[in-house]
Image 1: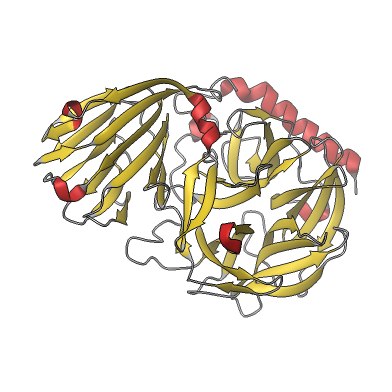
Image 2: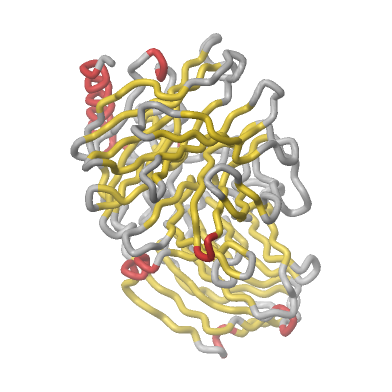
Length: 486
């Protein structure tokens, strides 16, 4: 490995970011979501608790606010809320990763932090990565910040395999290392492979954890972890699956399924289902906390949608960290409790002031806001009612379709996403608004909706059209803005 060249390229990228970060226009820049100081971000990588703190790496192009040869950005935290940007960890420097250090994961071992990632090398003309050689490569750090590449550790068995990426690593109770990643086999079918190793350097293929389902030709960014009740969760981003009703309407979909795992075979208890029903949620990655919780984070953006902050010299952010639990045959996501530390002021809205009849009520103009309330749709006669953010977002209960609908009205009419509801039940909503994004947790995290928007009017209003609607237990919190000075 040419370690000197790698360090020179990392230093060059760090210098560029430092010299240009003040050029970022922050009119839409998130206040409390992790966002690069300059340039592009996509998949979270290497999410872990190691060497006494949380680490999150991410796919990063530091030279422009668009996708390019992938580097690994890096941030650390002691509380999952306040993040400190670190030096870029990886840059393309070897022949096997010359066109990108693609997604991967991290693990602490023997007092060091190891990352396993996909080296990406395009085999045809620039700009077309449909034919590429992908391998799994290893790097190590003594201090958790500066990394030394150790080379390729897993290669495809056939040159005809071009999709072979995104390793997620863990270590079992016997000390054996496991890794799963996605591949497209020679039949052009997606599968998730499992390899094991005793030393991180030498790996053996032991099983196919997931075979093709619903025409998925590739499973990107798989994650595999145990939750309560000894259930295992397979999280992945299948490519090639068609929309079904209100689901799978994004360009790329993040899906999960739960089941049992005996060390080799995963037996799912259901088909894959879409885990977030908004517009902007992809490539989840999880970690275990020191107190035993399972926390997941994702890329809050979506392929083939307009990246409207390109001219502001930044693009994309990561979602808020979410705690995962398994209950009554369903996976729940709720915002981590550490986020409560962001609250600076609390406002409770009386029942009289949260009952609307074909009217609009302004709640706040704060661009960093948290709201909670409940609604029982069967008791309300309005055709549509919910919240609006300026002229950008309408999140509303729709009496005709019996759905909770997210409409991103600052783009176009195809920007609807909808979630079917039991209309006779009371539903609880927990909402985070952050300058250009909204994350909605429904019924204690039974469902979620995550969406970006691009308007600068942050006025949050309640509204009801053609009838009356009652919002119960409405509480508003002003939030701290730790990322805005990053």
